[in-house]
Length: 379
Image (cartoon, rainbow, N blue to C red):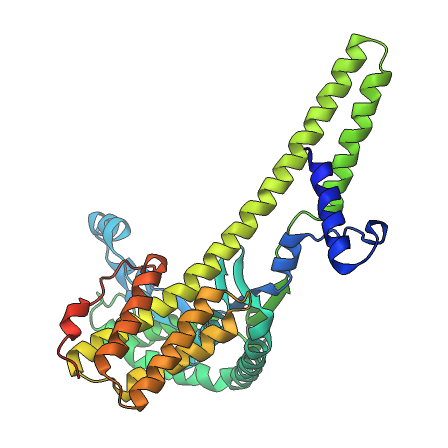
């Protein structure tokens, strides 16, 4: 029996079960790939700024004043003179920390995928709330820096003036000390960005978009093209016309096949990434808890806190409702409640060990679990 026959039988069976005529039951096409990817968005985070670091040159160190040509060639070829800061390090660290917190906030609520960070609808508001606070802080600190840059310039030039005087003692003194120091500072001052340059170069951008997938409309359009060209084959009068239309038909068939295959591969890749992240996190947490139990012969407060955090976060991130993940979380909750009721720690450890063994294949690192026999003496 062909596909059409199976569809008719299915419609007939459903109609009989619900007591309706088959004619009233209509097929509803669902693009399953689109349904999956529209349960979240890809988040792109772009944070950048002038780094206030410049390469140290021979001129900075007075090495250009050494007349030995062979030594100059050696310096050019082999010396890495390092870098110099144009503002105090504390300012650099301030912006680095904000950027780090922003990226950690993103990684906390998203999955890594081939397209970037996939943020499910279950965690989107959490990510956005934290991101808006950090974006506001970043912009506020940028405005503060623009206001402070004249004073910072004076501070850094003062620090470098002392260094330049000490550096002068190591040159061949072909210039006066004031000439050397003033030239050093002038070159440095020209490299320090102005408030306008900071305004242009500091940015914090977050973009969100759906995973780009070929739509069902595109697929249906191409399938219709195949059907139209197949009809033209029947109408063709010469072999040349037939050959031409057949080539067009094959081209569109190949395109449809590639689109459908591409869609499947992309969704499979997304789901694999989500599965690996969720189950890998469960494995890693349970492995660490088991190591702690083995070392302490008890379930520490830190381990309990870690497990409760795992349960809360994983439930939030499990937007596809993976049953084995939820089942594992339920077993962990049960084991924790048993321990509160003074159940055997050995039994609790076995529950954790069984779950970790099941999910070990999803861990990024193929770490070994403690041997369950090592927990035999736990009471």
